[in-house]
Length: 214
Image (tube, rainbow, N blue to C red):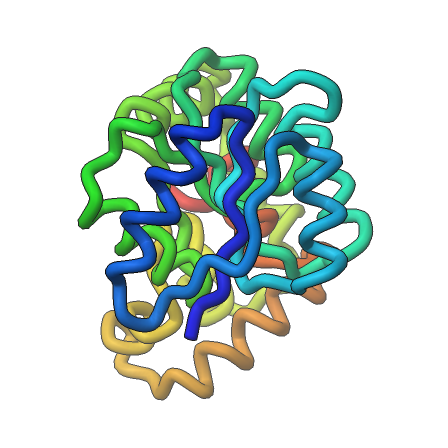
């Protein structure tokens, strides 16, 4: 059962999302919050598997709340769900530690898939937002920096490239003809060598230094 916390400053949005998710087998909405401070409080109380986080909220906004949650719980999974696709919101959310970024007009099936996938370690980003990210990366004309991944083995580099493209462990295992357990071990080793705590941070490093497109 995937336990979800919904944070949004609009009652109609919170209740709408709860209604949608209440019909999905395997997903349970355990708490609602109307701002970032409430999200942190409810997370402390319920320890959900995932937070659906709005960003532009009065008081403590979603980016600030995401950062606070990441400081307290390194393995927290926050899926930004917002109406904003402006560059500053996208980049700030990723820097704060959001595991994915969706817009509120995402179809029901896409939202459910993103929730399930995010909990399983995948990265879901709205296509329009992904375009901004890749344009940003491409615009910087990044030259692959081999020193960043100098400690990675050839196979670990292969795994990192696929992590950066949003593939799950199961999908990476299938692509590289490995067992899922072996992939998990590779991912753990990659995180340790890169000095990060989750695959989203590893993916950002791979994109930032051109390692995803080698």
